[in-house]
Image (cartoon, rainbow, N blue to C red; front, side, top):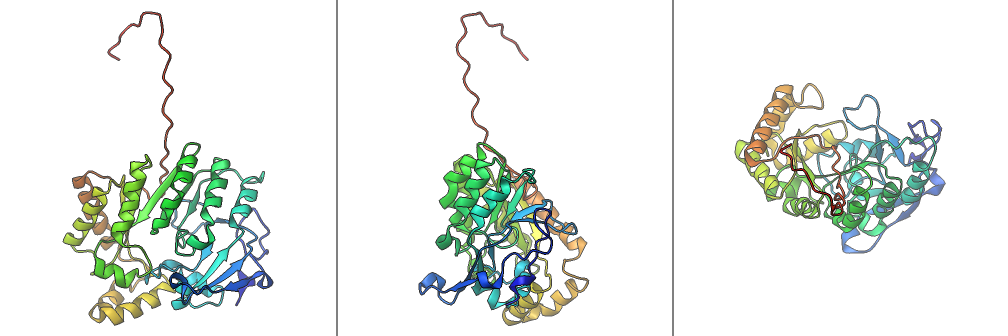
Length: 345
């Protein structure tokens, strides 16, 4: 495997320093039902705060990714290409060969304490899901959230995983001292489509329960309605059903994102499409003939429809990474013995 090719593009470490060396990799398998057929490559990373490339469309500059590869096995996942950097397969290999940065919490705490770090917002779950199945065994996120809390460093988490509820109390503590944004990804609610296109994820209704639970605990939670899949989840009735379900769980926002097919993901998705929906292959080839993204007119149409439905159901659009912070209650003022002048203003 080409482990040494992963260099850090960050001003906080040497540009030619590998993230880890091949001699630092420990490979494990676990003979339990939830991990059967999966291989875990445990490594000790040399850097954990990553700079987002300037050419990216992302609105944040820094990320933390404790895992590479993802057992959610979403056929459209744009992060599949990253597995090729390790000489790993971007198809089944991406779903089952998981790189685990076992020292992520301690490394993050050290980097947050560096004089060079300026306390910028850190986004998580933007590449692969930090609450995928492996997190149940490795438990990296509690240490990561604790480090962010202790340094009052703003952060956001995007997830399809219900395991985030395990860390609800830690997230509440962090939200008392810094800006915290939580978003859940739910692109559609149809069970048959979910089972084939996102086979390793919790069901959409379970993810929406995560949104409801966070809201019940005072943390507003947005929904990234992603991806909207052309010809499979984009009919007016399907969009309405999805937005209605998102509104019913108390989401503070809904942000639609149309499917994009970057190299690595494109080949895997098109193979899946040919197997499950062969009549759509030619339509996809035409729609994505110009590149990774659907035509602008189509993206604008979907965005307009979702925003209109969101307004109808009482929720509004916002950026997926917008932080939401629990504000501590204002202390009650002691009663005064002096007379009070009432005012209309």
